[in-house]
Amino acid sequence: MIAVVQFGGSNCDRDAVRALTDLGFEAERVWHEDPLPEETTGIMLPGGFSYGDYLRGGAMAARSPVMNAVREAIEEGIPVLGVCNGAQVGCEAGLTPGAFTTNASARFQCEHVYLRVENADTRWTRAYDEGEVIELPIAHGEGRFEIDDEGYEELETDDRILFRYCDEDGNVTDEANPNGSRGNVAGILGDTESVAVLMPHPERASLPELGSTDGRGILSGFEG
Image (cartoon, rainbow, N blue to C red):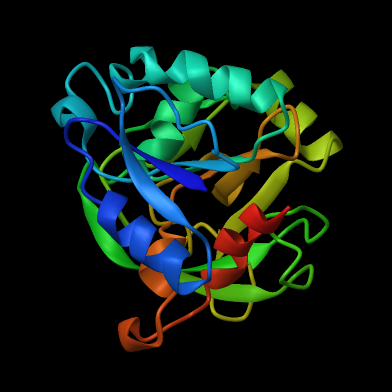
């Protein structure tokens, strides 16, 4: 069962459950003050505006009681995926390096973007080919990924960058970068392949009626 953690201010938890259920997973929402169900086989930190993004996006939710259980689950090899605000929570909790901060435009950005698959040899990207271009929506005001030089070099050396923002033809350019993320980074791995965060929303591109199913491959990473 995939536990979709619901924080105060989460607004993509129902979307995530529906998308995962449509893929054949058993999924349910779990309130952040409650324990994870014993039958948990995967954890998703969904998008939204936990605690109203006070202080900074994800900072308060990262200190929620459930995050200790998430860390224990990671040690047991249970996969964890953070999306949008969930990506901010993941970084703030130290599950992945770097930080997501205010967009270069200083505006909330809600649009469809193109992503180039940088590493197709992970549980979250094996449904794609390396270099493949997919289209997912974004909706964030603090989506700019930042990390120091040493951390960025480590991500590149260890092949932990999953997606980069690109144009429709797969060219990674400044113009194709919607928020000013360093290196056009849109998604990364943690210390292990079982943990990943990304700013675009795969659950919003998973059902045919939404106009795209490009995000299904990412969610299928919960299969193991």
